[in-house]
Amino acid sequence: MAGRMVELAEEQIRYLGHESVRNTEGEGITISYWESLEAIKNWKIESEHLTAQQQGRDYWHSSYKTRICLVERDYYF
Image 1: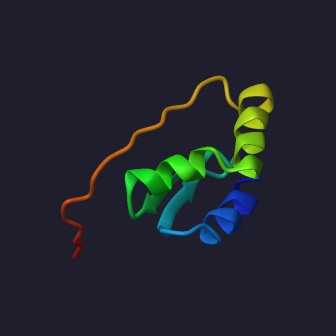
Image 2: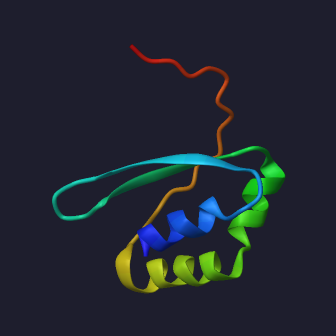
């Protein structure tokens, strides 16, 4: 499902990209980047994404956290 959500996100208007990490059991985190709060809201209500969210609550996750942040600067060495 995570792979499909990446594919779907990549099709969305104002999607900027994502970063993802997984452990050997397949558990992990994905951070997606969007151009605006409006783009985030549109992603949240996308029908296939809503189905994935519900399946996540029903089958895979006992809890989850959503954090919406503004990236002011991004650099690395």
